[in-house]
Length: 207
Image (cartoon, rainbow, N blue to C red; front, side):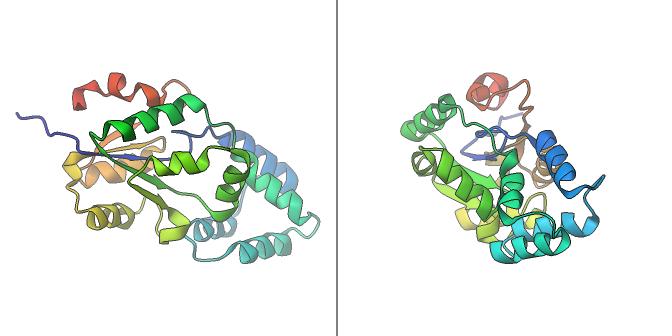
């Protein structure tokens, strides 16, 4: 059986390049909101925000309407609590890949305006990071989000790609499962034990 050559690498952002504290962020939010779990309505609203279907002011107003005892700044700080550090070795890795020009490099991230604004403020090399990619897709800008199949089809169509020639890297299994069903090669990375800089060692069978 002939091995399919990878021509395009599609990267997630959070917990692939920038470290996230998902558990800590949820615990912090539940404590602030004084609830045991987020309601289905709140989860759906968060998804709408990630898809750019509502803007930041609507998002903030919705939360402050539901939790009138918290301030706007408390909400923003809690929402951004998830964002941690961005090791510079990962910037070096993607810049070297860009310099080598062996692969088309695409970023595909579920995110939102508040998170990106926070990252721009605290990560000095964000612009350099973005420039390393051939295409840089953020869910709230393209109004699509993972794990829906349409976001993967969008990337294929926009860039005239064949899924079997693409490697998609994401820490969320739901996302890599969708991509795999569409024919992508995938790496569901574990951010606790694996680092994207070791891609060509960990997934050497693909290259």
